[in-house]
Length: 243
Image 1: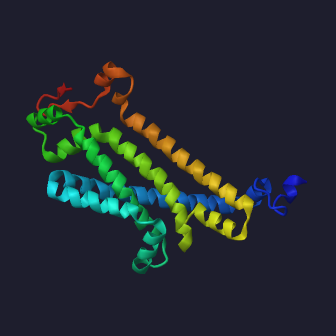
Image 2: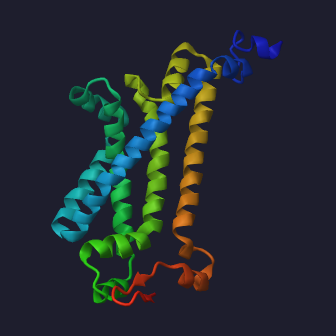
Image 3: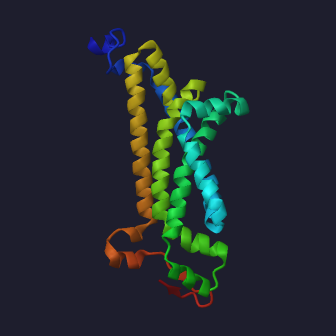
């Protein structure tokens, strides 16, 4: 009886709400995931060249880091409102705003990861005939992965949270349900959507942590295991490898 009437009594925990509104929860969750994935992926694609430019020319580093930091300080409501005249009331407003927010984290972590690559490793790779592009993708980025993945995890969790603000223009995923539930004081909807949002953030962080561990086996298991698992530089002429 309690479960059957919990929507009428407006309880916080209501199994009947989950049963009868499951399709709404699934649609909102899928929208939330889609916006998050698109924002983080585009942010990473934009952050990498910005970080490379900042590393290559010191005069560019200051403006790039300063601009991304300033963008991160803009309140999300103001950011989305400023983007509406450009993109209209569309999902592009939310995605663009989230991309801009992710840049300050991703750019700094990519720079930190590249800076952590030992200079002797770079010199060894150049001595073996590695060009700039092959050096970057074959040596530097693999060794910078721990810092890059750490930034990616932070950016992803932050994006999951900020996506809810997109409800102000109707593209907030689970935020739409939270916003509508708060307006009507529908307790079960607010709590259920909020819990799903938290679970989504935790799941994304755990998944990326597992990916990081798979991609960087040399960062665990002690120094000896690290030496065995660390990326190796292939000798172009003979196929031999050098640690």
